[in-house]
Length: 112
Length: 115
Image (cartoon, rainbow over all chains, first blue to last red; front, side):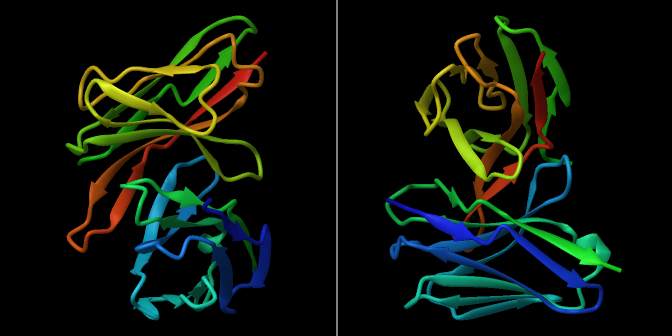
């Protein structure tokens, strides 16, 4: 079955880059997503990448996809205190219609 | 503005009571979902509905019930049969981006506490 794994916690200093990693198991995934959850709130879509792409950049965010290793990463450049949140990766398996499978989330703490 | 509205934001329940969480969307989305989130954990799917008058069990449906009488509405009832209902509940709906990606839009969540 599908399984999406993330490390639980990441701490960085303000101004540094953050890299949040994710591994997934379903090679049929067509899209992979990154969501952000601030305390006590719902999830917001940050970005997504199609499975035939290696990289996608959107302002301070860079998504890297290694399809061979089933590894996805989210890099946040010049991390700010407002980036402190939980980040979830998710996959959309090809045979699951519009269902998403989420990882457990990585809590990013940005220290001033 | 289009979006998903969940209510109430906070809810307290005594053991043995049923409670219903509301979820309304004005995005014209066909599919809607209920997730449960426990502290420090990811999202677990409770129920989902791909179309009006149809819904399917997710991974943790026991002790919950839903209805989908209108496209805009997907209420979740937490019954007394749910052994550990204290959690943060998230409602979502799916729209398809122009690229074909299945983009989930989430509500702000409802926090249920059993006293």
